[in-house]
Length: 69
Image 1 (cartoon, helix red, strand yellow):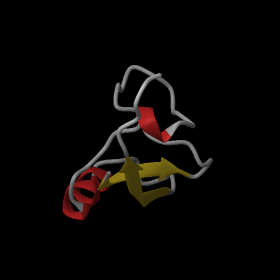
Image 2 (image 1 turned 180 degrees about the horizontal axis):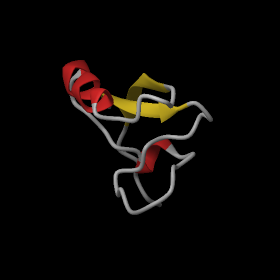
Image 3 (image 1 turned 45 degrees about the horizontal axis):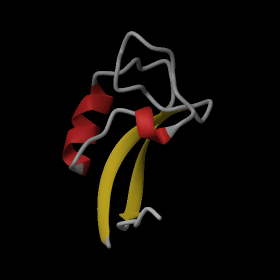
């Protein structure tokens, strides 16, 4: 079992910035742009449009091995 933490950015509508900038905003965090550090997320957020509201979101994931039967 393991845990990981990453940061992503959410817009004012609750959607996430996608990891592929050619796509529309995503509701699923799996497809969101991810940052390993809070500093990286803050730097990216500085470059976003100033007329929109963006929030940095911390995501904690846990995972475990699953045996197939």
